[in-house]
Image 1: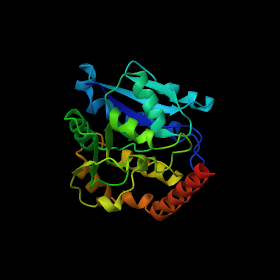
Image 2: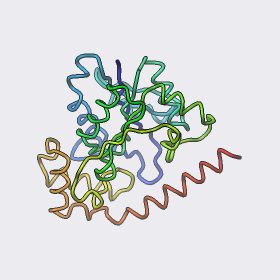
Image 3: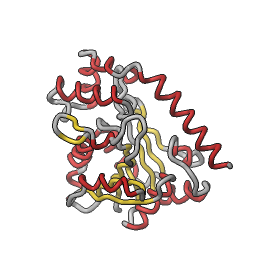
Length: 253
């Protein structure tokens, strides 16, 4: 069984331009997430059971993400506007059986969450997701058969914001993970204040990369680092729903 570790990312963000390339303590922001994935899946990758991809659009601007390509990370250009279709194109091109799906904004995506999803997929579950961790730290994934089913129920138009709704008809195996203060922390890169949050954590919690997720979250809250971007919670969801509704309207027109 071959599983793709897919990081969905693109250039052209309007709220934080070129966010994946933003310098973060001397490195481009996305490199922290890629390191996290490679460290988590080192053994399956060596055994040929897992492979890391950046799944981006076909727009020429996305060529800038090529700086992350190496022997372990492969850049794939697929559909610009429909993320599930892009993932399916990648899966077919690389003969994948399943996908662990990781948002490129989620620099602190939990290794425990990613691994739990990977194990569920290896057990043959069609759709697996974790809950219980802060926003930006959970993970999910799906078999390529489930992905094919999801894509077949949608038209091939715009499907980006809230694209997980394409899987609504597929029963998910939910894995509940426990973490104190999960509702207090926002760990996703979408606004300048989010970049400040990640920078603060990296600066003030030197061992952040090796800490279990619950311990990392506790330290973030204990040092009040979650307050750096806490004002964005409502703003993010308002914009999310507005943009999703715009996409739905455009798809129907």
